[in-house]
Image (cartoon, rainbow, N blue to C red; front, side, top):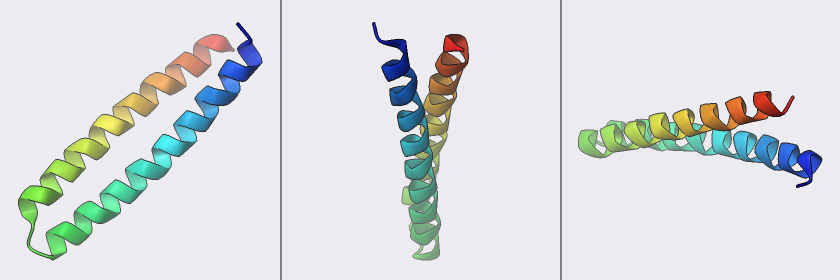
Length: 65
């Protein structure tokens, strides 16, 4: 296994995931502004789950150091 490639992939995934979390939170707020509170709550839950996934990816990165 090429550890350098793995490190690069993990870093990319973590950054990409952060971008998605940010976008989802923005859409959640827009949904709330439009009166779609149930949609907003689901999107915020999705963002939280993605943050947790990002944390796992970062912990894996730390273990490769």
